[in-house]
Image 1 (spheres, rainbow, N blue to C red):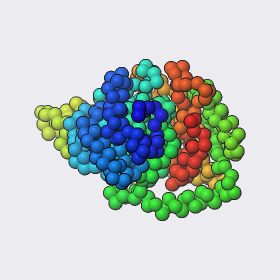
Image 2: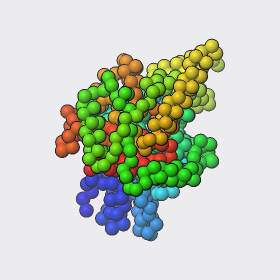
Image 3: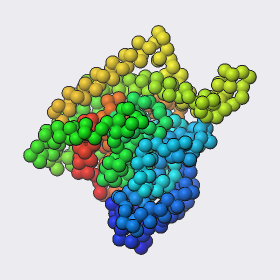
Image 4: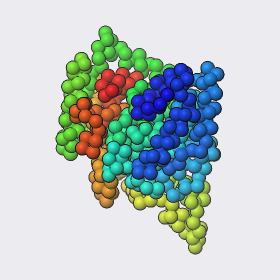
Length: 485
Ligand code: GLN
């Protein structure tokens, strides 16, 4: 049977495996052929794993023995900051060019148990700091739909491989939007789970109170399948939530929408003002009309402190970055350069190993944490973070989910914002709130005109749906309803 990569989903592939239409080895080979054809231009992979075919043949045996789960034999790409034992994990940085992971991240361990085929590691902004993959030490990942544009970031490689059919799904990490924004730019689905839903053990920390791992897929259902496997309590990550907490959340959510009514959706209109592209607003308004036709109630909500989100994020995130990055000093971890003295070694190693954006954030973070400024910046930002969370809690008393565009614009041109960090930071305006509050959020493609295919003049735009803590199931339900099929 001829494998049509563009049409596959996890469930379809599983059925093909069971029916004997093709094997995991054949499918993995088909993806590798596609990578050979396309990735020269896109540059989404930093490495395609040599043992992918071997893992696929192990998966095939499991399928043959009737022991396959939905994910057995499915080729998935992994962001370069998630550890796979024995493989390089460089976090897109020269600092870790030769670093081989010594253990599996919990998410990897879980996927291995299912018999997933890891096809390769994907390009990213250095240490996940950025929104365009232009900050990778290994070159930019281009948008598969228009090679002059960025794929988004920091999980740009992970979004591009899914959009270009170079993997069926991928994992990314999201500290301020790094799963949802590239998913939005590439026309695929990206989920940032509730903080604590997925273990962070074995993912290189950027902002530890903000980071989450999540799937990037072609469909909402695929995201749900992967999320169900990677989530759960982990003794290695004290912030993880047990499944009982999830269950109690789900009960309270289903009580609100008893009698089969569609969930009520909140829109913070006051926040959707200037600076948003016309096309984005047009698509967003179309989505609202579509929701209404399906019987959803749309309600205006107020999030009085949401306009501070970006400022709060760009104080707290660098603060956490500056302490998390301290370990990359050439001695404990990373590239080592010999200087004139011990302290000089440290400067030389960091200067040689780290890129500009990473250095900028370490400096900023060290400044906001320094004595004399700690109260004025770090503590104040933390207080406002609480206020933002309170705003959301109040809003969720009357709605089950909140919708906004994922980003203020579609994918921008390569180089367009590189010299203007603030313009780049503004891209995160709608995504950072979910990280500050720990709420789950998903980005799914919406189209201005659903009959047209994506093209250079019709680039993808994402719709972001945010739900209460632990209510990913609400996100999936709504996202499946509105999904462009
Ligand atoms: N673009 C955001 C930043 O640069 C998000 C990064 C992320 O989520 N890892 O901080």
